[in-house]
Image (cartoon, rainbow, N blue to C red):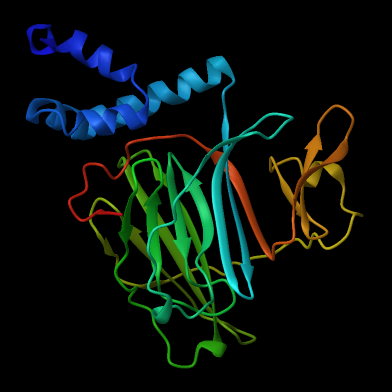
Length: 276
């Protein structure tokens, strides 16, 4: 029946559906599957979802907590409100534990519904994954070009984000030698291209600095950039009015990550994305 409506009306109806309903629609008929998996539809649906969330102030936070002895991982979405209510639990993708250099994949960043996971928290690992928990799909990145036998001599820094100019999601990886006058190399992974660029050396020196948050003496404005903060082995939230920290009742884990999250269809059009 819906096929009798004009195309713009059909799209308007689909744009109003939540992400999980759209996933079900891909199994109903071939025309619906084609429409929803179209890259243009995926981009527009994401934009409309972000605008709707901003208007209704219905923001979500992705929370990832890990214990390492024994390995225990919890990942869920929570409402970004004072109560910090749980929205839904997220099932983690199946990981090749025996291939990991570290005990678990840590969250590097979140962008437009994609979560970037990396195996390089304590050691120089080479397993990287882009994961969309809303549609239960993931893409495991190919091994980067820069790999080293003696990993103690090198330090890796990795980042993830969206390139609006090329409409592409990219991973940037910096490798620095551990010496007085280090050489710095970089390579970039493109989701659209599905591969890493050839490694190149930086023509200028750069330095990556980390700010310790191991005590309560840090100024408040250094912490409000994050919705939640890992502070004395528990998760707390800064109150912008009172400038006090609220205990969120989540503690006992060795690793925490919390970041703003929006449900999206990103990866739905990727043929190499694996469902789980």
